[in-house]
Length: 193
Image 1 (cartoon, rainbow, N blue to C red):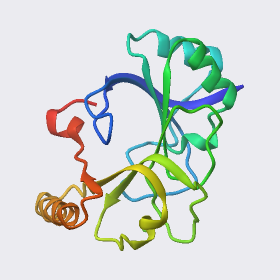
Image 2: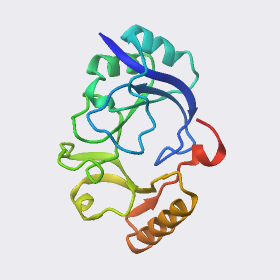
Image 3: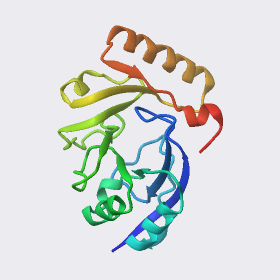
Image 4: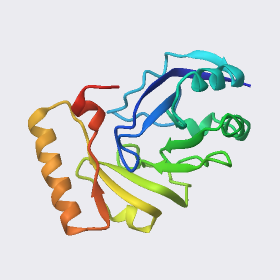
């Protein structure tokens, strides 16, 4: 099996529940959505085998691995997850929730994009972490999703004044709805990948 991989890199998790955790990021190329704020160049990537991916991951000292994208649930396989487990890794996946992930993933973060890509239904019934990128959308649809943890993350629009306004609104929302926690993109704040 070969996968189109945009990049594999080592850094600190910059968002959500595991913020600050050293992790190896395996970024898949390709997605079923086209979000305006996407940070992945889907046309770029290198075709790697399962062996190549595992070898690249174990070259780093972190036990925590994040399968991300693009949309990793379209490409990652149960066999790849099992191979990463066999190498002593804890496997997290960040998904948009429109496709079911392979069995065996240890931690599932769902970051739904139904507000920016309407008409694509969520099929994921539950997750460990629900991370909503806030851009003034209606939050009611997310109430029904089963999640152990809920994070609201202001969208980085590239406009400083708009970003401040979204941060203030997301903060107020969390204060009014304490089941939600504020998530900031710490990696951007401290200048790392």
